[in-house]
Image (cartoon, rainbow, N blue to C red; front, top):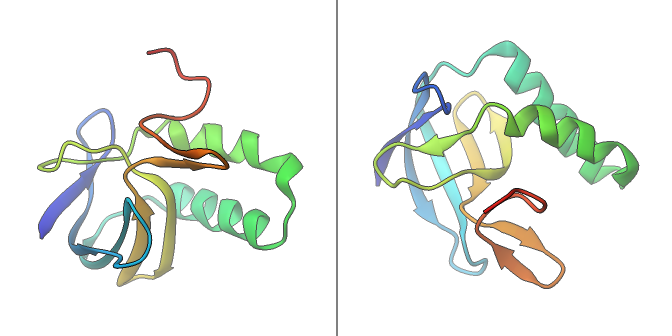
Length: 113
């Protein structure tokens, strides 16, 4: 499927060709066809994933809040993006539901309905 990733303000950051992971619900792999992610956002995503990989969970909330402020979403799919991982300039992973210890939820924990 081809879609665009945009901010809550409608700024398009990427055009991707993506497909679902066969084993993980709500998880998708995307090939980035056009990459316009701002350097600040890329740095935040990289920092977030380094914290997760290093199990430094005490610092995640602040970084996640800064990423959340972008309001990343699929334009055509109408889905929010969570836990984005940029493998390189041409590939990425993301969820369309927020993974928690008790399952997947439709929005960030603590977000008003």
